Image 1 (cartoon, rainbow, N blue to C red):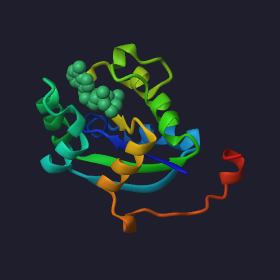
Image 2 (cartoon, rainbow, N blue to C red; image 1 turned 90 degrees about the horizontal axis):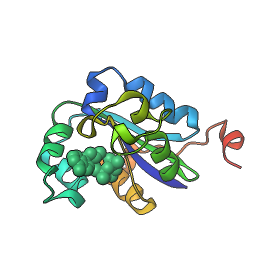
Image 3 (cartoon, protein in one colour; image 1 turned 30 degrees about the horizontal axis):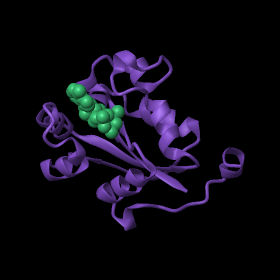
Image 4 (cartoon, rainbow, N blue to C red; image 1 turned 90 degrees about the vertical axis):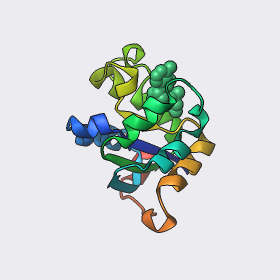
Length: 149
Ligand code: DAT
Ligand code: MG
């Protein structure tokens, strides 16, 4: 089953949008297998955003993600990566479709509320970066047969 890492970013937590954002993934049908509240360290932020090292926005991005607590969530599901990205919407909130998290709740790229893994491979890697094996719960959800064919 595919896995994706969701980060409810500092702006979302500060704005009281944590529940609203979790709700959207939950009602989509993705299964929560891990969740925790933490302040991201600089070291973990640099690892998570390694692909963006050297870009002009990198320093601001690290400052933003480490500035205040976040909620990290590991989700599982068929097509979990692509489904979560659709639910999140385009990176630039002004280009995100209405109905998506960013399209409904955000305005600017540096305050875009939520992270979702961008490939199946990165989903596995990012979940492992934020969760130890013991923090992930493999559980049969009673609604699974009504959501997964
Ligand atoms: P996404 O978060 O949609 O996966 P990404 O991986 O390309 O987008 O970039 C990670 C974050 O970095 C993104 O959420 C916001 C920030 N970012 C990306 N491109 C940027 C840019 N051109 N200017 C400022 N911030 C940017
Ligand atoms: Mg990305």
